[in-house]
Amino acid sequence: MVAAVQTEAGRIETEVIVIACGLWAPQVAAMAGATLISTPVDHQHAALHAVAGHEVPHDMPCFRDPDNLVYGKGEAGGIVLGGYEQDPVARWIDGAPWDHSGISLPPDERRFEPLLQGAARRFPFLSEAGIVKLVCHPDAMTPDANPLVGQMPGKRGLFIAAGLSLNGFGGAGGIGRSVAELITTGGTELDLYAYRPWRFGPVHRDARYAAELARESYRYYYYLRYPFDADEWGRPKRRSALHTRMQDLSAVFGAKHGWERPEHFEPGKPWRRAGADQRKFGWAKPPWFDLVAEEHRAFRERVGVIDMSSFGKIAVSGPGALGLLERVSGNLIDRPAGSVVYTQLLERNGGIAADVTITRVSEQQFRLITGAGYVNSDLGWLSTQQRPGDPAVKLLEVTEELAVIGMWGPQAREVLAHVTDADVSDAGFPFMTSRFVRIGAIEVFAQRVTYVGELGWELYVEPEWAGQVWDRLLAAGKPHGIRPGGYRALDSLRMEKGYRYYGTDMGLLENPYEAGLGFAVKREKWPDINAGTKRRLRTLVVGGGEYLTIYGGEAVHHEGRVVGRLRSCAYGFTVQKNLAYTYLPVELNPGAQVEVEVFGRMAPATVVADAVLGKSAVRAS
Image (cartoon, rainbow, N blue to C red; front, side):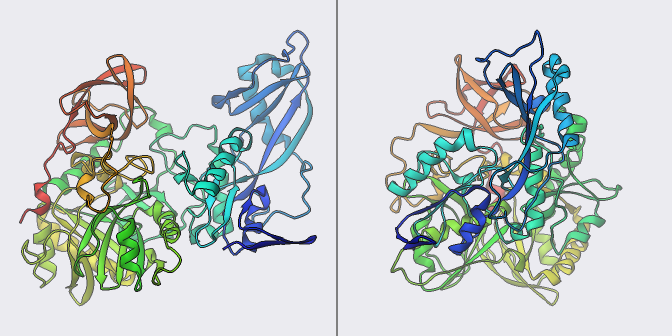
């Protein structure tokens, strides 16, 4: 808890400190034992001479031209021009010098030249303008180009407003208001999930890695990043124990929270890392469409396996573990050891803070499973929910301690039964339960859960044994047509079954009833959050059976007005339809007709049931 600030001029007693220290925020936060991740990245801008006959009027609005990577404003008849370089420079990755006074660093005309050329494409007369002065000032960039805003977990009274990532002028007012709301009320009007200052994990404490991510975020501040593109810089950072197996199977790797993980497979080709691939094929059907369809069909019709080691794992233990989880979870957590519970973690107003499964390992031990990119955010949030006087709770990220293999499909039971003597029948191993089984001589923790809507298990194993378990499963599954799959197939599979994805389909501004997850809420625990619900997440079938280039964010129209925007989108390979989620007014029930704006054209869409495929297969014996 904050008590005071000690300065050279003396001690200042206070219960609230706001760290708004720009480049120096990480060093100042460290004085309080807090970790912030941001990197100074050079940002250049130039004052250009006025061009005779083309003087810029003093009241010319500021302009932004992302296509040409520049922005600017009029000044003295000329233009002050800034922009976002494609090969930016990170500096002072171990900490900005205390004596840096804001004076310009030596600029680099070579790096700035492409921006001048871009500006001249927009304003041809600028090709005749000379530079009055070119200056260079580093700016604090985070690995994802989002600011750091909020109260630090375990540091009551320590608030952050830093790492603004070039959002200083545009975002300062809103950030200041949000910090004031946090200090005075404990909450904010806006959803600041993406700004949580604790969202980065130990992997980002590698200053060189964080700097590479910051540079790439800067690069794409204006430069178009296509929806299917993957990060390229700072890779590889984290590899699962199954990485070489994935390479041998011709994986195309994406990156998530530092993890290399398969997006899809290209049998017969060398493995590779995905990058700016969509820049090559543009807004068209992706070249991997048919490959992902085959992976999808393996899970839906036979059996498929996927390396899910990157999924975040948090161990929650101690005499206060159950009390903490019960208080913040929508669902009932107090169930027998071995139970697996699907639930949302909820804010006081019912807003969804996380979407997780919680396994009760023993009386006082729980394992929480979350998305790879959310683990540190969820860990910090849980820490903020602990109250003075509560029984002791230990929170620990254990992601790298266990490799995970997901295996699902109608024939998953036959494959698992072939490699273990454990009873994996429906009666012997019910849905949403867990236990240890032996695969050969290897002890494996198995959970019967699903994210694809088919019978199957998540298999947790110590990393050094993961390869052997994988090999045994593939050998046993060969007669059943087993096939490895990637994360692109998961999107298609989950959407056919109505499964949600946190951050895209729900967040702090939605409650479980709005998100169609009321089944995971115990009403007696949260009696008020369903009151006055005016919108609901719905599934749309968009267009006909031909693939449509929908990615999320497209406007949904009904009777001439915009009523929502698309969230998750995927092509359902079993139903052969374009699927999308969107929040709609509650009166628009299944059967309602709407339109989706797709690249300037209206595509007809129909509201359908949450799951276009039934979920009965999940529990099928």
